[in-house]
Amino acid sequence: MYVGISPYEGPNIYTLIPVVSQLYGLWHLKGGMYSFVNAISQLIVEFGGIINTGADVEEIIFLNDRAIGIRTSQAIEKADIIVCNADFPYAMKNLIKDEHYKNDYTDKKLSELKYSCSTFIIYLGLRKKYPQLSVHNIYLGENFKNNIESAFEGNLPESPTLYIYCPSRIDDSMTKNEGECLNIMLRVPNLFFNKITWDDVTINELSNKIIMELKRIKGLEDIEENIVYKNHLTPLDMERRFNAYGGTAFGLSTTLTQTNYFRPHFKSDKANNLFFVGNSLHPGPGVSLVLNSSKLVTEEILIESQNKD
Ligand SMILES: Cc1cc2nc3c(=O)[nH]c(=O)nc-3n(C[C@H](O)[C@H](O)[C@H](O)COP(=O)(O)OP(=O)(O)OC[C@H]3O[C@@H](n4cnc5c(N)ncnc54)[C@H](O)[C@@H]3O)c2cc1C
Image (tube, rainbow, N blue to C red; front, side, top):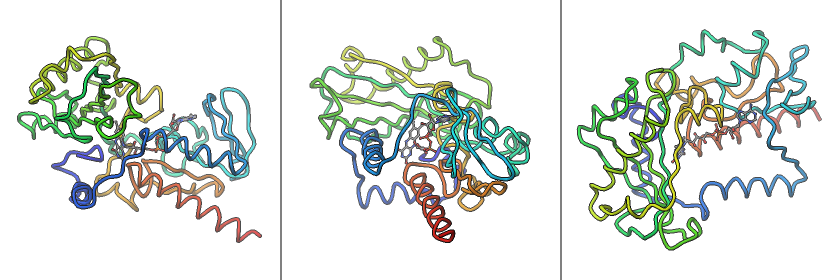
């Protein structure tokens, strides 16, 4: 259920995730994941780094088997080393224009790879507390197998299985009022299936279906009348806002032949000062593995710079 694959098809190593969570518990960052982003940003600035935001990278520029800079929507920036965190297949297709530097990841090869599912999320602000909820809740819909597999067949589920995240149960900083904030996540097909139009009709139908399902949970019967804020995120948002290739939630799927070492590697074969981090790469998807991928890249860059000195 965790890494955007069907629980009936994924390698069973992933059952370790719920086991570890149950045995050792989970950490919650006060203020949510964004407080981690803020902490890292602060550290970078304290070390004298500069963070530029608001400019899309449009191309990685190469010369004589080296990456020499990037072209953004605002300027051309020169660089000694480039670390690309945009989703790897998106970067190969869009940011690297010259076939020579795509390693083996040509458009044809990208189209042959398998990709994880996407998600549809509704965000709710509620006027009152719902002590029936835990921080993490998994609601299993009827006919679980058919419905959980529908995302991998290109269809929306009839009876959704939901992940309901309610951080305000343990963190008051998540809400400004006395109520709760919820993020309710449903697995849906990625955009490669091309079967679903993510317009207002689909979004409203799906949101209503989710809210009807929530109202069936004991203690949540009055949830609809206590909504003070509502928003959503679709696979199209994932693609348009974050350049997630095919709008996937976890990038390249973790099938056996695309897991761990078999994923794309973090260093370009053609330009040895170009590195990649992120969830479509080795070692894999999810926040902790993505952080590991950046640790591996950092260590490699440090080793290389020590060897040069
Ligand atoms: C709904 C949902 C729930 C999840 N839940 C969990 C969970 O509970 N636990 C867990 O471990 N993982 C979870 N994940 C997965 C996890 O969020 C991802 O694996 C992880 O964030 C991927 O990190 P990344 O750095 O590869 O990509 P991202 O976090 O997407 O970072 C890439 C960044 O690059 C930026 N970018 C892209 N293209 C450009 C460009 N051309 N120019 C400039 N910037 C660009 C994007 O805007 C983005 O900010 C979840 C994912 C989703 C979608």
